Image (cartoon, rainbow, N blue to C red; front, top):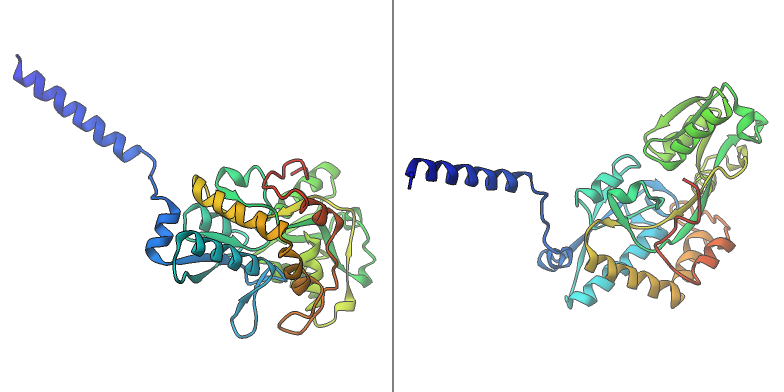
Length: 305
């Protein structure tokens, strides 16, 4: 045997194996096992997605989505037979929320995030817990009642949102010549309309109603225009975690089918909420109530992205 040739081949094979190990995608331990070991879950939240996920004057994280997530944490605790399962919070924005889940910085994202095919390339979703539609908020004195009234003007939407993508598409399709601005968050986008830096803010209608309700002079604003897109909200979770997703989906379906979701909804949409005791007075939309009859994470037929 040519020993030089033998060792040369072995060296080549060893190098190839090492290279393959370096290039292979990272393999994660089962998320449920990780949670059991660390004895806490991390919930990603927003600071101003009222009433879904926001922070009050005392720094408390709260909202409709947060309440639902706490029930999901309890379902995980029971499944893992833990005496306690702590919750830690991770603040995120529209532009960082998907990365936070994709990179496993948080176990669940509890906010106002639309489930669509493009995002599902990076993250997974559980059963939808709300259905919104994209519209515009303007100052009433502007006289604007439709997107076409804004031709040539400044319109803002939130960076990283589906609303921004829809706004850009409609601008191109209808040749509106809009000067489209990008806000870091919903509160900033609304403020840009309030102080005259933008003529309109494009966002999900339910979030616009929440921003108006908590504004200094709510009567100065109106939500206008035709529905630009349908936005099914769902809680995000990391991809490729079938056992975790199955558990979360089962818990979500139970919350909905056992009607636990209805008092949670009433608390945040039909009752006074912190920090000002504002009541949004928004009865559950028919489309959302109808979706709860057959709770599912398959939402592609609901809207055109």
